[in-house]
Image (tube, rainbow, N blue to C red; front, side):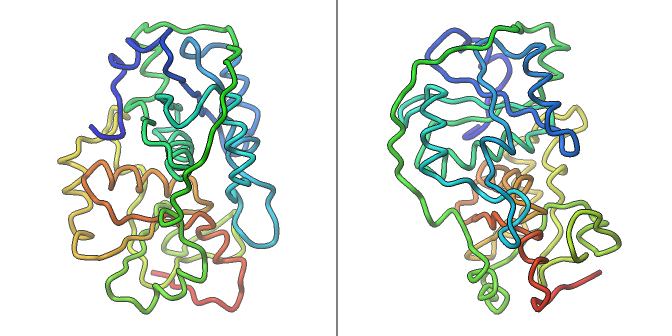
Length: 275
């Protein structure tokens, strides 16, 4: 596995220089993740909050979870004890939805040693693995960024991609939102024209562990013919799951549209499809 790590492997890293980050977060109850973290977490883990640490303030355009200022985020990563040489393992209890966001952001800043736990925190607890209530005080580091701009796509590039036969957009949302049957959080329902549906939850197995690289390669096999794949969701969170899963399957031409549908739908003049 290139970007995933097993519970056995992570347990061996507790107490070492590896930084562990707890990304648990519940949409609709923004404080729940922090409450659960304070109750107990994997020993030594810092807490990374989706809205406080991994997103910026929501404005008219840009999506519901816009990326934060990257210099500010790099400073926060340094406060967690992370620099470009630090091994980092991230986890959540949402099948990787939140952890993949942090994984992607660190990779975007040039970090090459970040991994996602391939099973949820609840499995860790059910397996009687060690947990703790102590909030760590990491030694601060200087995170010098090496930005990878090709990982990110902005709305103007998405507009161009609509007319490019060698680029495929994929939508990570559930089918009801993708098809336009309903959308309770964004101003319009539907999807970006030409986008195919790849629900982010399909990359995990019934036991909530990530599928194997071979299974993921089969899942995404129809995308191999494209020069570029652009992943989006509602607000740039679960789309990162598909980015990680495709890279795990061996794809190297996947980019994230961080603004995602909530950005696209904020422009009433842009085309949409329903199906």
